[in-house]
Image (cartoon, rainbow, N blue to C red; front, side):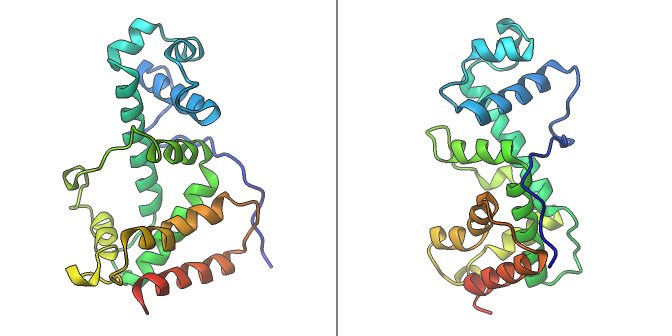
Length: 205
């Protein structure tokens, strides 16, 4: 049976979060490292300035406050995650095929991009977390439109069972996240079966 290799952090840089000399990007990248290592409360601006090589004045030029910096970083990480989840999507896929594809991509994101995953876990369970309005999502993108359609309940013209949103989250990408964070390794065949079981649980077929 083909097995996955050990979990390791991918240092690949997403086009939305490039490395290099750009000071703003360097600040965001360094803050992502700090929060992944130390958490929100143990990532002061003084340490950020020292680690990034940017003076406090430069940091505050781009980000008026630490809150602004963290919210900007969230938008970057969220965009990166969405890019990974939608990668390889084809409009020829059925709704079920698209879900399985998205689920496996989400698992790969959580398994590979540890910094981003740690940041999202902290952000979404902290006072920093804010409701994202529909206006912030580009529904003209075919992949995003399909993703939205998948997660729309039957009562609103979608495919999902009319379960509480918390249940849908836990049975879908929440399941992918929990499995990806575990030490256990799964073969591609097993992951596909789990994704299929997830679809059955939330869609009923």
